Image (cartoon, rainbow, N blue to C red; front, side, top):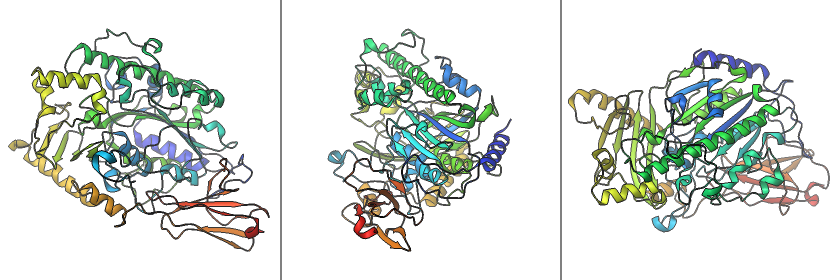
Length: 585
């Protein structure tokens, strides 16, 4: 079955079943943003792992058995050409949340809120267009119960309108009766930091085994730095496994140990995913849920994460449709992370916002994507400027700082033992030609790789006459893309911030919301274009306030206090306006 047939099935099913009256468990029901019918739409569950290339059986790597992931893949559709627009997490997550390229909205520097001492720059947030909302908010407005467990990292603070719950306790089980859900579950065991010594698993990740036991989850160490000791860390894979080491890494005991940790972390993640899927099955929801599995970008090893090569961008992705529709299919269309938001909105029966850069890759009449695009700017304490465009066979890379070397001595990455091993061998002149490439002091202004024949992107074809037409075609496509999204590569970050802040010296603040009472109803507005307005029935000093999005004027009981806040993405939140009985009575 091809993906158009799958799309036709799921889209028709969604349009047929969408909508139901929302019965809130709170004292004041969240306003239904649209008319609902008497049947619920399908649920949507995202299973998101970190820092992992397609190192799975389904992509030809048989190093490790991942029974839960493989079961999901066997019952679903395997996508073979899925790419992040960045080789690092925060820009990638911004793209997923907004359906926009991070380099178009000020989200591409990793991170916008950190390394201020090293760069001398202020902390700031990405600022998308005023009309932009997070994917979760669009689904919330379609009647979904939206949860995120646990990581955000969007390069901006999520408005209170974005999620019903975003925490270690977030779970679809907390939704109203028969309410559909959009749940994102993040698994961080495979993160790059899982290679650091001393080795161990993040203890907070054990929450996935606790079956939504809130007391037990709260008792876990909540900070990601708290890990098990190596003696207490489960060994899922023999340490003497024969690993297929990529040519850009040396075959040494140090690198082999990091390879073992990487696969062992993946095995543990597979067990965690199995625990979450079992909860879905126990709730009788497995066949009424679309399940999406993917990684937030490529692998954790040196010359993988943060780079614009496929080792940093290409990820695994499966989708299991209800009742295993389309099971066993493989789909090789090009997919970018900017496509996830519009596709999900379309599946939920919503209209795709015109400002989004992505496409509905399950759409029956959606033209096939010809190219994927990617960008690199600042990475922690060091800045570069690189852009890339790729079709199914060729990757074109444009280096805006050719006099700057490829390798950046990032303090965080140098905690990885295999990175330390590379530096040790470099210092002693023991690296092979493939391994030494990354450490060249300069780089070509243009690079071109045949990614089918040269998947590790080691043989630059730019400058060869027989590839001149290909290089020109991809270079022209890059120019078109940069102009379309308004990306100015190599723009000093200080100038980028000035543009996002509209020339102000500090981050703009969302204007205070205006509360009005008319004909017995409360209406809320904000002078700031694009502001998301939330309100809660109670005083803002109450930490247990339940914030809910404002859609239309509503009634409240006499004597009820109301707190209101407004927040445009990328701006500071407004001050909270709290009004009591004197105003509302």
